Image 1 (cartoon, rainbow, N blue to C red):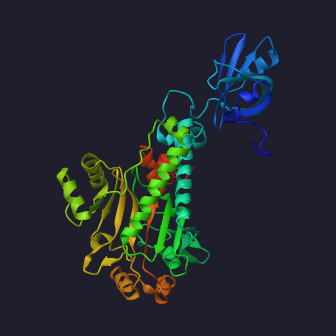
Image 2: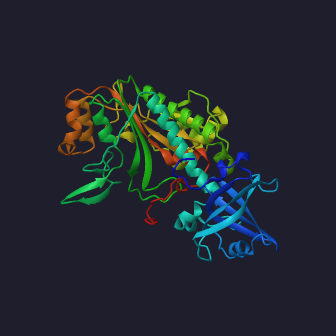
Amino acid sequence: MPSWQHVTYSNEIGPEHYGKQLTVGGWVQDLRNLGGISFLQLRDRSGVIQVTLLKKRSKELFDLAAGIPRESVVLVSGTVKESKEARAGFEIIPEKIDILSKAEAPLPLGVIDKVGADLDTRLNNRFMDLRKDEVKAIFQVKAKTLTGIRNYLTSEGFVEVSTPKIVAAGAEGGSTLFPIKYFDRSAFLAQSPQLYKQNLMASGLDRIFEIAPAYRAEASDTIRHIAEFMSLDVELAFIRSSEDVMAVAEGIVMASLQHVREHARAELEKLGVTVDLPAAPFPRVKYKEAVEMVCGEGLKIRPGDDLGTEGEKALGDVMKREKRSELYFITEFPTSLKRGTFYAKRYDEDPETTGYFDLDYRGQEIVSGGQREHRYDVLTEQMRENNLNLDSFEFYLKAFRFGMPPHGGFGFGVERYVQKMLDLPNVREAVLYPRDRSRLIP
């Protein structure tokens, strides 16, 4: 245990501690009083410890424990004893119990109660909700997912960077920007680090990634949209086509799923989830083919239309049924769908089509990106098509005038990825404190 750690956690206690004195700490999950003996279930970050109190041994401790409200925080010092009846295989025979913080009653939310609670009630009492093993496990899996992503990207020579979240202009149009007051000027919360990560491609830091919040003022109350989300953004230079970019996205998924399978077994078990490792390479479906597949499922989507939520779900059903794949790329999006993404590179031989792609997971988009337009004259013309004021993008455009290599990248929705990985009903389940149109606190 670290020198600064003064309590022993349940997963650190083993046969070598039997007969020895230890101090444990946690929340009082439950107390069963059977007359002359009582069992206090003490929950810490890694499990539940049984504290066994005998009235004839210490009536004072026995009576003290009987009066402790559930979810109070206590320290227990005592002897570790092997016990085949206790779930952990041992129990603590206490010498001392210190009540550090007594919980009020009634509780705003049950922790081990069988009665369910709606999502709003849970989010309003998130600190209590997170005491549930299955809820806490989501964020432990999420953390290990990010570790797997970082490990893969750094092993491939990518450098982690940080870019501003207070910006002067949006990367994807103004309709979904959050305006803020920045001293005596107007500014916005960043939709993505798009302009900055492209700027870095001209710096020699030509393989970069960032994991940081991004903000979208979308008036969408759905199970997949939130106003503040964690975005993984990747950019790399000297590429030949969007295929090089897709290879990186595929590598991230494969490596992070493998990391979760190896390092989050206990958490996955608590969630009752099995994470399968998909076959690589992931299937590629051209946008035109995707429209035909979706129409074959009975949806009316015309060429040039956005697939939308229902279209993505339908395509996911087809891919799982016919291709046995839950992860697949949709490629060659029409320029009309990506026109607002002014930096998307269009095919020279077919300007009505881009090399942009989406990566979908179980019928939901988790990644979008592709090769960028690195040629200054073409880029500025595309910006004019979008009625953008070039003067407002001077810092961005300047890098394209002094040596910009071919490059590409993508944005990767971390919470959407975790949502689909763990088959969660709502993306808010994968966010500690979600932000949407109706929720600003806690």
